[in-house]
Length: 197
View 1 (cartoon, one colour):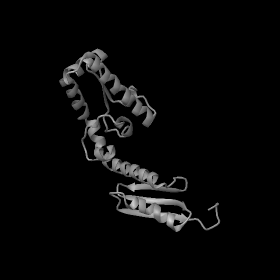
View 2: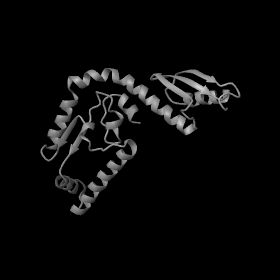
View 3: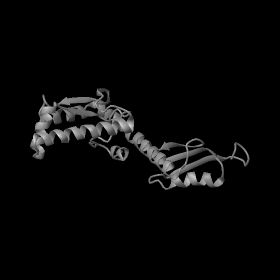
């Protein structure tokens, strides 16, 4: 999972919506590398030993898949310049110049300063996403049972359950998630006959 990789420290994530998943973290540095179709075709022809037509198809398919994934998963346009901190045009810059620009930008004091608090925030966000997924898989509806991630290892459960079994099930789902050390189960049980249960 992207959050788990990111919370370990410096990492390079290519695609997978990381520019959207990590957009609220100031120390996540988002780069978009662009180039003209002609230059991209030439590069793919050389790197993959393909004909011009084959290289064009590879690029077209790749762009289409990226666009469809981001549109489906996030309802966003992956080429929206606002999603990125740095946009490099490889028609104008060599590979070495582009790499140097990325590294120099990433090593700025502004990026280093924000990294200190982000590890804990990423841990919490990672745990939150894992609980959401586990609840979804277990069929637990978020209409009356809720949770809050107190820190990267502690979770508070609250809301209203229709039975003791439902309350226990909500806790057991969270207990099975790797990294959870403490659960505060504050779920109330609705008395029989109240609220249509």
